[in-house]
Image (cartoon, one colour):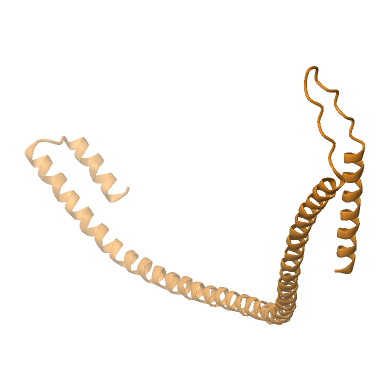
Length: 201
């Protein structure tokens, strides 16, 4: 505050000096032809004008100083608020880092337990697949054995019934041939040939 006042007073002194030099160093204008000569300014009037101009300059400087002082106070207030917000944000950041580190630790534990579970489940799956293949092979062998026994039984039944059916069929075919011969549709040689084929000779 003292430095600002000193600067203001120094500027006022400089302004006073510059006004004094400018007023004293003015060149008198040439008198216009056929006009009355101007009266010189008295010392009292000069001092009054100088004081008035200095008071105006001082008022302007005072308003500038007041404006700068209010701006400084507002800036100080905003910097204090910003500092508080920075402190709050820093505290919040620290809390977030702590929670993130705790989550990381929990995630590492979960990852380890998940790996153990994956290994265990894969081993169980392999054992299940092996046991399933083993049981399927056993079932397949049983089905093959059942099929072979069934086929053997069917073949034996077919062979027994096949011989009986073949005799019956042969007899029926011979009866047909005899009827065809009686009707005159077959000659004697054709009848003999067909008969031999039926009997398998």
